[in-house]
Length: 221
Image (cartoon, rainbow, N blue to C red):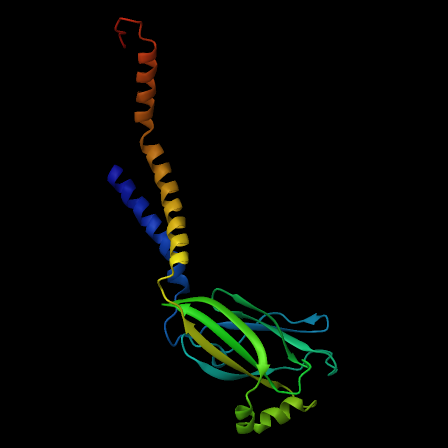
């Protein structure tokens, strides 16, 4: 029975520490799910999942054009902004001004993603001017973007991946420290439960010794 209890304890602990990596792991070439929402004035859309061809591909640098539908009540005088959630982890990209951002250039969303092994660690993004060589290659994008009657607009997103070293001393220390605390806590509970009889016997013996008369031997019933 004691052996079975130890085996169950070990199995549960291994399952708990391995669960996040199992559920969130990616492989090179996997589609990383992404959703977006927009806001114009006080009107904000709900989160909408983006189709696979517009999403990042794990560990693959690429550029995609995403369509932007005309916002409700759009007058062309105020900025329209987008926000994104990236990955199963739902990493947030805060609001980015895309339309009417006080620039005469066509915008491009520059997204940088950090990963190591099969894990996505972080994402940052900013709006920059679309490179001139791309505009020259696709002149219709500029024309359609500035045409007030043409919807949906199309905005270029550039996904750039950066691999981090898997040997991260700081992160490794925190993970090791947290795992150690968890293991110590579980072991403490296990030891206390399995040592109840020994603790009770120790208390009885201590009490018997303390009540022993000086120079004599106490008889313990």
